Length: 318
Ligand SMILES: O=C(O)CCC(=O)C(=O)O
Ligand SMILES: [Fe+2]
Image (cartoon, rainbow, N blue to C red; front, side):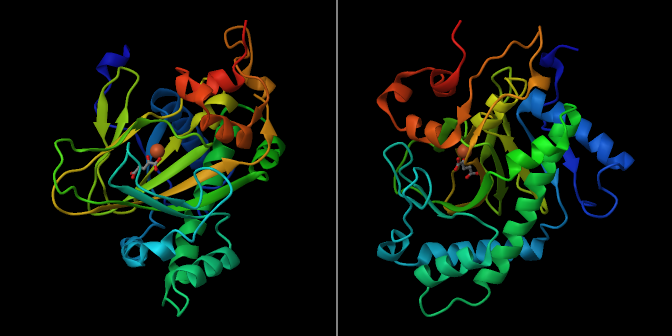
């Protein structure tokens, strides 16, 4: 079947029984592993139905997010980081209506607490409780998907543990203001994420779009207990291009601000393409990959000039 006949819809995979029936060795686990691999190979992403993200929890999380963006700017910018793309992300000429604020190394009650004290020195009811629960569900989910990927490619689980043990999760609160006057509804231009994987949760205002292999954009609707799992450049390297990083953008119009949440998984070590993913029809495409090194490279002129920063950084040159 040619890819032109694909439906204009992303695959949805059900993870709601994670920790119950959906556990390693069960038949639902095996079939979910296959669905995960197929979806990532075809689209670089999939929609997950995950009941743990209950409407009550998600509404609570977005309520906290709205309050966070009400905190004075001079306080928001105090959330700094030495690493690029962590901490506070101000509007930029490319994304003038977009702002991001992140908590790194989460779920971790001490990190959430530290962040809460910085943003609301006089306290903030429920912020830590809701954020920790939300981050725990997304973090567990992300690790599960990685386990499934290793299994679906026949790679021993010890290798998965070795990768995930050098990963960290960053939870980013995102806001898109409405423009005073703007002739475009493009709020975050098309890009791939530079980290390993990303999970995005939308709320009452959708706008996320995914580019297919045919170059068509598919819109991702916001729905209760749904999130989008995406491959970033790191997963593209790890998989030796069997999975391509998901190209995505945000379009937003109307007079309501858009809020979203992203769980960005970073690898903090150095990894190589597993030998199981290299064969005659899949020759090795990438050298050893230092994820933090790549994030630094991405901010350079050399990266900006290249068509594919990831290939320029660690692609095998013939
Ligand atoms: O707001 C969204 O839904 C997407 C944000 C995004 O793509 C990013 O922060 O990299
Ligand atoms: Fe992104």
